[in-house]
Image (tube, rainbow, N blue to C red):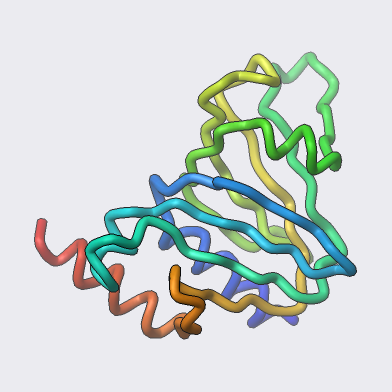
Length: 149
């Protein structure tokens, strides 16, 4: 499980500056569409998105950043989460879950951002044609993009 959490954190970190377009949870399968055009177009010039499937998801919640004196809000309702515009920053494994830091651009929660807590058994990555991309392939795509700077 620890390696799977590391893999999930790696994937979200690679999508730095990408955005969460949509998310859906159905029978512990969390499906997330991530817009990350700068990486997607390296697969095909017309691509903009990646599709993530996190199987065995038993934790998915968003915690907006607050001042230390404020009580933390925990948001689990997908309809509320889906209304937000999240930009991914980075992810890391914390205890027994993945923490994904992000900016929230439309300020529904009146904060500049927060973090998702995700716990899942595994992750699959797909391109816009539904072709599976391995984590190593995603790392190579990411390296190819950043080596141009």
